[in-house]
Length: 318
Image (cartoon, rainbow, N blue to C red):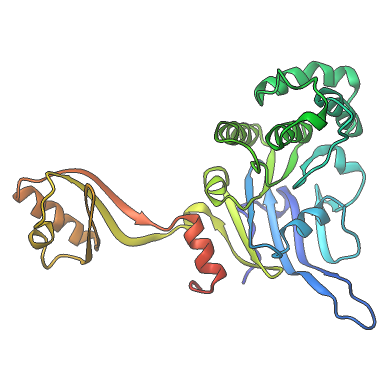
């Protein structure tokens, strides 16, 4: 498979990975576990990039290598054009780990100031910006409570702010909506969209495929340490060939009225679905109108990202 480029020229790539391999537990007497096996990708500026795969696919290992948290790997991993783990680019990076832990004796506000200072910002600079972020994630009433009193969803919101408050150019979010309620997930999606609009690159690892489908420009699907597919959401969710019609009135003889057109007719509550070519779709419309049936919706069927993901992992798609 040719090296994917995520639509960005090499010189503009914030992340560049070539033939990356990582094996845990390898010794003279043990082969070890290969977590990454020849991963090659580039992620461009101002994109939202999704990383998908089953448990053990190597997603978190890849992120930790890029963050400089996992040493001794083979291949090349560059962040801002410098080797992963180099100290200087770290202030330009935000990171929300999966199941993150913050000092629970601090309040949310104190934790944000402390971690923001670790990222190179001054206390005064942070104190000006933290209130806006706290309001953005709906934590005004809880920011001065101890972290030990926070629910999982509250911890996730504070964790998101700590990843963003120092205004990074590149953000790694590992399961960013884990434990967050539907309103909170909407806020997270809005924030990510705003970051994209300002040129920030966001790298998302998530098991919530519906969220990834809504947020990401491009996606890599991994399995057993390898990349098995990369592309836009549109490329990864092709049309199925089925078309859904909502019609009025519905009748028991709809199938008979359409006899001879398309294949695999199936009634639905408000109409029907069947497999059609483009010419056959026009013929269905003509047949329905001739029968005095009003067409409310015509919708081509397409795979969801979840269906595409499962088919790829199970080997049902090449």
